[in-house]
Image (cartoon, rainbow, N blue to C red):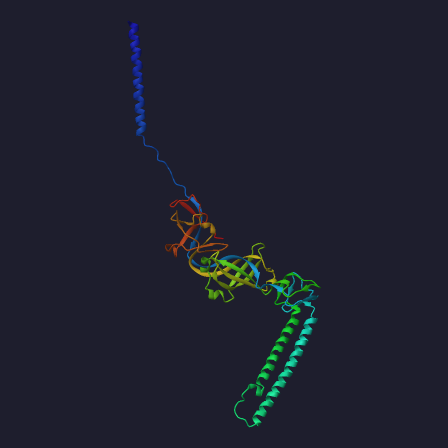
Length: 388
């Protein structure tokens, strides 16, 4: 009996202990719930961004274009008469510069001298015949007047007028023959048509030339011209055509391959659009290109910078400021903002942006290197850098 009471006592004690533990834990949990939570100190960290401070100003924009230098004249010199080459100038070699009217070669000209002598003899005879016809006409007029007859004769033959006209025509024909024969003789001596660079030569001493045969390929040496195709947007940044066509508007030329530089000018503008590219070309020029300190040879591929007109209310920015999405990012009151735009012009050093009118007359911090992860309203710390 006593053992049975002991078992119940142990059971009740265990149950009481469990109840005590449950109540104790409940109180502890309640106290934890009532305790105030510590405040989180979540201070937002502002990222540093590189900016340049810009304001709307007038800027002179250089328009960039590319083209190849070509001689003003490029021609194939051909023989005007036939004959064997009897003399060739020592300076008539490829790569040499020749002067206008410089003798290049001579052809055998004995036949042309003979033809000229014959033509001059025919001219002399025709002039004698004209003098005789005129004397006979004067004599016929005197006889008509002394005969006492009045009025005009029934036939022009009476006063020898047709005979005189025929004699005069014969003189004119003979004079033309002399001019032609003299020209043939002169063309037996081939001379340079202008100051030129000899690109190629097709003859040698003893060669026989037919009229029309090639003699040489010549490039004029007085001027090279560079055709520069420009878009309609680029044309809007240039002065008026009247100003460009004065012949003194500067163009800076740089060889794409070597970096050599030349000072040129706008020689003229083409007034039509290319049907394929839909662009209009400006022609730049350099005078005496083969006499420059740095020779500008025909065929050189160059980059041209043409001084443009002054544009007002423009931002001048590094090209890196324009994001891949065509946006300009700027900082205002410690946060980021943006707007979409397109450059109105660009050159080797910068792009030129016309900002919204709300920015006119203000100084703005523009990001130099905007990232694709930036978001409008993002807090940043602007760090001003040089715009070089």
